[in-house]
Image 1: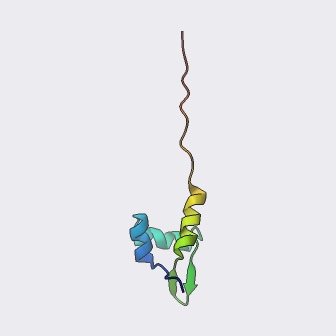
Image 2 (image 1 turned 30 degrees about the vertical axis):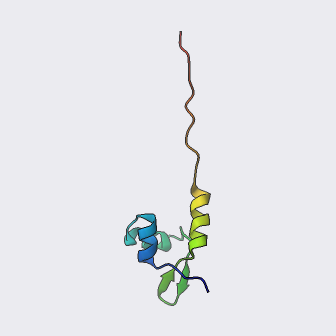
Image 3 (image 1 turned 90 degrees about the horizontal axis):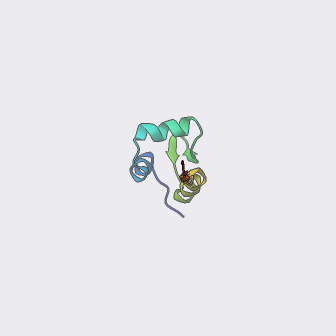
Length: 66
């Protein structure tokens, strides 16, 4: 069975506070598993969630003005 991440562990990996992780959970922003009153996260689900939010940087256009 795969190991599930706690709120603290996920916050450490993503470099955000526990409060931020709990806020994401509250607003159904992040994939999670609820076991009774406990929240856990599958690392692979979180990786896919992050990848879906990744955006390419803007391309700068070079404009010649005469």
